[in-house]
Each structure stands twice: as structure tokens, then as C-alpha cells.
Image (cartoon, rainbow, N blue to C red):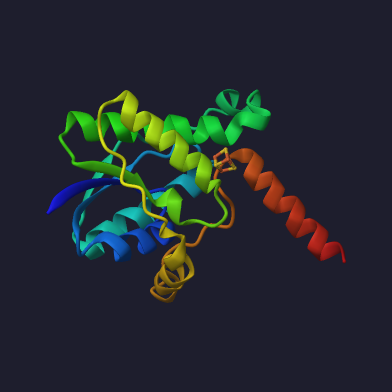
Length: 180
Ligand code: SF4
């Protein structure tokens, strides 16, 4: 079986990817998500990802502990998601190349809430840059099924994308709903 290094952004998003490729590829998870704010949220998501890796008996590579730095994000405004995808996927591409994986990919491709085409483009460019291969599959088809299967098992379900800005957007939406 070919080896795939799958960037895991969170357990619920990775369920679809695992289901779609685990019969064909040997998957390893790679955790690198410095976009997650705050430290407790980071821990909740990471613990869930580790638990999922253990449940599936999948190797789990861990790049860093909590490292959210608001200064990295606050000046990025419109191109923030671009920076976010690029900074995460670059680590994965380099690690895949250095550790002789056949491919790298990301569970970000399973969420209908993410900028799918931008992720695909950035990952493809990084594969060219670092002379490795990006496994592109549209994992969105199994997103809700995968997420619900983990919800039923009691896995942690996050309520916002990850950064401080996405948390604030979520909170203001919640506030508006409650004011109606
Ligand atoms: S909204 Fe999500 S993808 Fe965009 S910068 Fe924030 S955490 Fe990253």
C-alpha cells in the first residue's frame, strides 16, 4: 500500500477522509494546527485527534504544542485563510518529502466550510515546490456522515473554524440569534 501523510485538522473532519482512502492507502496522521485559539480549544481538538488515531491504530505525528500568536494573524485580514492554509500545509509537504511518504493530503478537504479550491491550489503548488506528491480527493461527500459517526461516539465537536477571528464571528452570530 502507498503511504499517505494526512494532515488532521480535527477528528470530525478526518473521518470522511479515513473512510474514503483507508482501503487503498496506509494512512498516518500529522497534527500541525497553530491557527487554533485558545489553549483549551487547542487541547480539546488535539486530544480528540489523538483518541481517533488510537481508535483506528493510526500513527500520529505531532509537530508542536500550542503556539497561537495573535500578532501572526491580526495584520493578515483578507488573506488570512491563505496564510493559514499555507503555513500548515507547508509543514506537511516538507515532512512528507523528508520522511518518504508517497503522498500528503489534508482533512481540510472534507469540510464544506473551508475554501476547498484554495486548499487544493496551495497544496498542489507546495507539492511541486518540495518535489513530493499531493493526493487530491474531494472528501466533502462523506463529511456529515463522518462527523455524525464521531458525534455519536462522544468525540469533541468544535463550534468555529479555529482562529480568534472565526471565534468572534461565531460569537456574534450566536448573539444575533439570541436577540431575535
Ligand atoms: S477562518 Fe479558519 S481557515 Fe481562515 S484563518 Fe481562521 S482558522 Fe484559518
